[in-house]
Image (tube, rainbow over all chains, first blue to last red; front, top):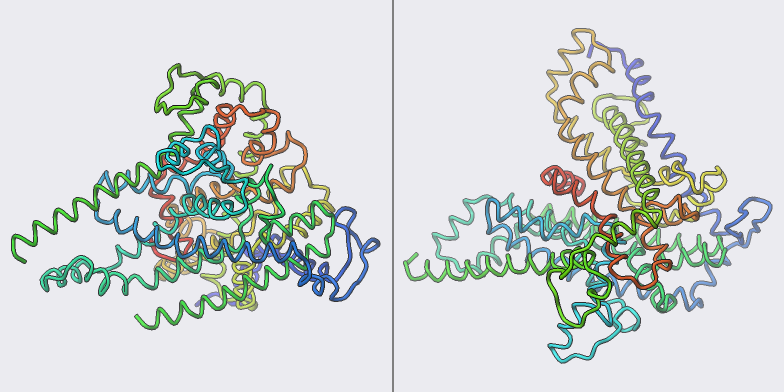
Length: 297
Length: 280
């Protein structure tokens, strides 16, 4: 290099300055504040040093006895269970179907499966609220045909989470489908030609060839889904309006409720820290697993 | 392979293909159903049997949404804030990605740590402190207040760095020989060579920002400052239970992103696979 490094350094700092200012202001600073706030008793409105009071670990020690926190925690876990693995399997099945197609049909079919992912959550909410409407929803004709009693799905606590999970899979599946398609395309055709020469059946090819070679992508999809679904809020909030929010709480919803409806910044921050730790632990574990999976293949 | 097994193979394959196509149609049907219902009269919508096509197609719900609600302001707010998020995110990420990829400077490693950290921290946990920050800055109910906390998209930097890393060294060495400034190298070599990525990243960032719900929902309390994604769910009470009307406003809210996707299908899918760390 002909250039002196001092000059390089100066230019680099100028280039990263806008990024640093933004991330400092809206990422580093709020993150530190979240931890500080979690040790205080502070209202959210009129937040400031004068109204905040240090309470030590109080906000945390109250969590185990907090019924709403328990609901939020277990509902989040339940939601993850209902969406992550089922959603991944559905996406894999669809991707396997799509790779068989070619040309225009392929892009059309992909577009049909992918379109929901591109829509805002409020549109998804309107569509499904209408489709599953207790009185006039078109899905209720299906219920009638199958001889199932009509139920106000989003008003019953038994059906709420499975229904929201179903809608979520429908909404976010397109993303996983894209990743699986990219993964399937990366498998060399020669492998399949060799399998064909060996007269291997469809299922054998999938089990012995496609599945193991696709495993790194599958692990990636599972990871992304898991982290995404831990942070669920929008759909639960929208579908629960007019229903029973306290039965359907999830972690982010509870943060919102504590902070913005109970004006209790400190306790809300403590819940946020718990979710923060959950997501970080899951991410770190997952990335280690991903690395293992990559080393194996 | 004997001819017999080949035929069996093809029949099974054909069945899978047909199932896939039918499944795709069923999958997208609720979207179709929502759109069709928005063109029906209210009393037609609630008929107890299925009508796949409106008997008397009407635009009155769209007319109502456009003239009797604040959807016009919501559209404007969405366009401005989504463009703001896109321009700021893409430009700052481009510069930072370039520095990370091409320059050696002290503090490079901590910078990576910062990016990775922001990758892992869910922005949802920051809503309380974002709210306090934006409130203290006096930016609630403003475009700037909606935009600012949405600027954390570290993945855009990472994608830019990957693409800049792939530009052959010779280009840079030749430019340095000619005594071109760093700024010139960036604008005349690196940016033009990567227009495709910039387009793709801009489109998806725009879609993400348009679709953002949680933060715009918290940052705005005045109905005329809402983005359309939030607005159509918050003012529904005023509509009562006019299903077709609600659906018409939902169609209006989803239309721009759906159109962006249909027009730039390949770019969108490319950017989304890239954002997950897979080379599309």
